[in-house]
Image (cartoon, rainbow, N blue to C red; front, side, top):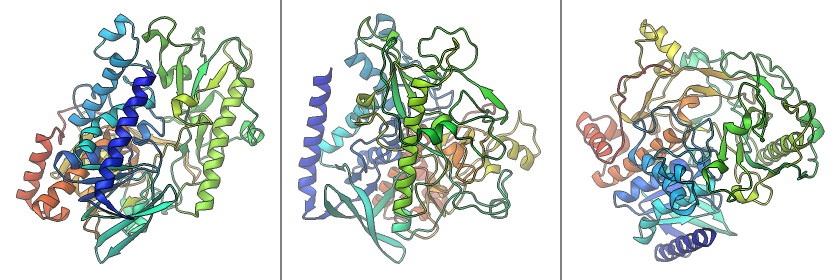
Length: 560
């Protein structure tokens, strides 16, 4: 299996180099659509643009495309209907590809192989928890035909550092990687970076952090705007367990700080951060969980070992796996003592380094001091899996980003468009009858609770019910700039509504619709706002989306 995987990547990389050579002249690259950021939304945007026949350059800051699915090591977090509806056909193809990859390359048990709804990791957070490298392989395979056809160039380990704009149009974006800079010129640009990096570079108007109640009228907005109040980021990692052994890591330099750290949040956090007690996201009351990699404890409640488990050795033939593997993306390694953007580069690197220290401190605490269900302390046989994350230190290649800079859009999704309680208040209908706002310009659908993690402004969770929602085209169109589209968490949402528009299938849909929109605008010689603001043109574009497998409306569903 490993040899097959290496051969696949070598072939894919060769195709990228060959295609790139045909497109570049020195340090300049010209294409139809430049997608800056190769995360979940960026990959989906590339698929949509390429299948519509346009030449695309896709850049990615790390050496893995896929974003939260791969380099951030976060298995899909999805709504309960995703197996049947509520996602694009391309996203369903990706999910099918994940299961098929296991059938093709792994020694599954007969029962697992025959399971049409195989959950490789058996995690409780999702019906398809799996290793990030499998997502990488599937995404590469989905994009490979367009690389072979000469429609797609992928530039790994390249990040945007500059841009040129004139009036209301972006002319070029400069990326830097491997000690060199490249200038990408295109009639259309898509910002699929994790933190909306193109917005300040292109002088596209944007917002950050928490808007005020005066600005949005939202039920849970504060009285004053808080642009530097961002949701926590998380440096994820994977763990195996070797009972009876000692796999202790070196004691992290900040371990004493994090072991004793008691969060100062409003409302109050109930215990130290490194403990098995936390705030319940919905009620904010004390919530006790436990951790047991042996699965022997009869204790009730949530076992965090199972929560985001990405390898369940019971799915594979005896002897294949030494251990289950769990992915750690928990409240205990959420970092909220500073931000990754909005300040200086030095500040961002400082907080990223501290986020890594928090995650390593969590590992060391679990190995040495964490209470066990049997009354003991620590599991010294826990060990990091750098082979899973593709890094030397065993931490994810990139932090999991929950919130981005966001465009000032033609239309901004507010809490009273999608939040259950807010909709009840606005419509006067009971919760059993209320639905999300119907957007005539819908270009996709999604569903997730409004789930805001503790923030750098010292806010505790804001986690409230939302309704299955649509993605309005107006949220993809900047107020002024004509040829730049968002394809990640940087669309026209607020700090609050970002909480339900940020998960995997929604980001995919945002990116796919953005890629399709750029292609449609180039083909029809239209601006995006012309498509939105003309009913006939809008309906023609929506029909194209539906024909390409993008759902734009929901059946009648109950609130979550």
